[in-house]
Length: 610
Ligand code: G6P
Image (cartoon, rainbow, N blue to C red; front, side):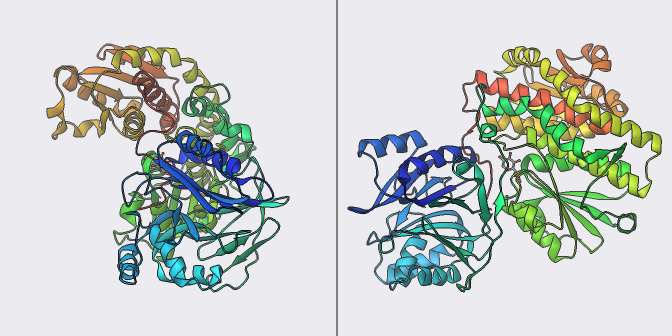
């Protein structure tokens, strides 16, 4: 979702801003713009609907933009359609103040009406423009004073980057509920929505917290609270290699990230297994605490929610404690039953999804302890949790998540084993078998990936089916949800996932000759049941692509049109393997449709608005 980058220093800002925007492309956007302060011509703005290259071409057509302080922005439209005029930066009517924004100003309509009544003319339909105009309204020679007045007047979520032509040696930033980081370098400072935009220039960063304001010049950085009292910030070193955010010879980031899964899962589990036991350092899940646990509430969105769906089966079976899985956007408004004995398990790749963050805060407010599973180190969700377990997937760039999903599953398995060990709810033999199976997953993932040509071939057979249903039971159902999401995200085909037994309660009316059904049937204890449902759709003319384990290839092959298999493993771990054919199938189908795989239409990697 919207990306912000800002630069102030002793070098030309524009190339740094454009490069930063390219690195933020993965967040999802529909338009882009830059504002640079040119000492001779004042604030210069170029902005346009479309890709960064369109923006870069327009900048070049103007002979470049000169200046050593500036802001860049990628916009994912919320208020006002994607258009040149609605793109950021937005500038106050007299051209003095330029603003970029990520988030939503919820009371923008009321402020806009007020400003219009004072004679201000608005150029765009956006909520962001009210910030630029309101800053001008409150500006009486001191931009920081104006910023504090504005942040006390606006409601909603914002990460703001601001340049004022009256103090052109500095950038101002402010944040509430939308991510913003500051980067420190020799003779320059940067600000950005996330580290990928700045990692080329610096690895020393700090994370702005809610209500904070930053003032950056080439040589100094000051951070204040919302009342302009100075705040000391802790600097952090970012370890990510820049190569991790590059394609490394693959056609798409998505394929690269699919192929990285064995390593990502290995990196995530290995350090947490010592002497035949799972060790979760710094996680306060004592036998006493676990004994008194009344419920685990999983809170997440999108694919992370699907990890939660799989986790419910594993955790309930192994811990014999109730697990509820909530979509974060529902949880936050559903008056949830949470007590001090509830463990909120928050799952998020980015650590910035606004609904998930709000769900975390609600769970904490109600007294729950929060354990989060997060990929982005130092993200807001990680910082606001009581305990965090990081997935060591490295930067994930493709919008459609793959390696983050797999590593989240691996962390869930570690938590299940750890808690079961603490509570004594599984036998030593079962514990050992599960742990050994978990350690075998990276190698088994390699085996599945070696079979990708077969998956590509099947994608070439099925890619033209306009409508696809994924069915499965138990863990297989959870995997079907993710398989279906992957397909619709990147290939734009209509697809739905159903618990196989539920199909006959309505949805089976949609099955007709030629409909594609992907039947996931790895779980041994429900295999025959799922196969009965496969027979039901087959007898109505569906084409069926089956996914199961190697040992059931033959059994499944007797009923379905084609079978894909993954190595046999413990039931609890099946999703880790079964999801890979789903990812690759979606990838190759999208490839055959010529889709923009890494940047699918309308989608954002990090969803920072409600
Ligand atoms: C977006 C992404 C999905 C992701 C979801 C939740 O919709 O496109 O891939 O699963 O957000 O994101 P999170 O970062 O909280 O896991």
